Image (cartoon, rainbow, N blue to C red; front, side, top):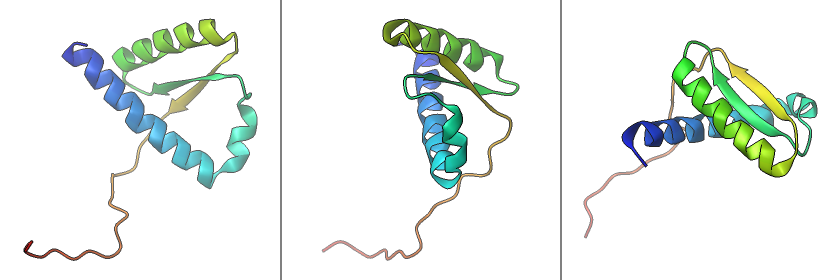
Length: 92
């Protein structure tokens, strides 16, 4: 896997994680996605990623025979830690 492919995979995993969190917080959105669907994540303004994601989605849909559902992400909020309590100390 080359550097570009690795970057695309990492971006896709990050977006998929955020999408799953979104669905947990907005379960009514999940109703629009058939059980056998392949989710194609698209990011406004990132044509290279979008082409890559569509190609991967099409390959997956060909294997499963299900439809492709496009999820267009227009904006991401800042990444924040969810840690609410933390202690740092010298290890023994």
